[in-house]
Image (cartoon, rainbow, N blue to C red; front, side, top):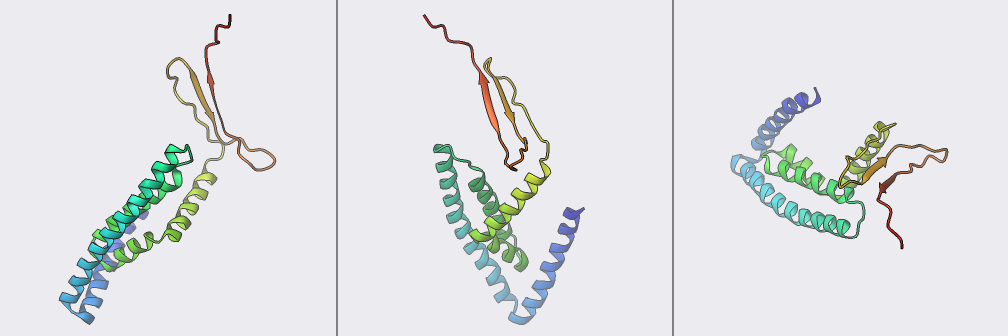
Length: 160
């Protein structure tokens, strides 16, 4: 339902802003601003996207959690799509997503929402290569911390 509301309200907001701003500054100035924001947005998205990709690569190489740079990359990609969409409202939202502190704030909100919805969630990986892989998620303890674990059952070594 919220997606339907979004697809209806955003174009209405954009049309209203085009009429209002176009009436104030004129057609050519309005078109110039729309084209300029598309070029500026493309430049900024490319620059920040490459930075996020570099951070993601670094996290993967050092075996650190890659979720944060991946989330930043997704939000930068969304910003790029919004900046390429003609309109003042979508440009404002797109440029706001290029501000790192706003991305961090959004990421934290989504992360908290996911953590709150995972109560009791667990999963098991499929067997691969004859070894059992398992992951346990969501075990809550009195301290409020989550303990996660992964184990592999390997064939015993033949010691002489």
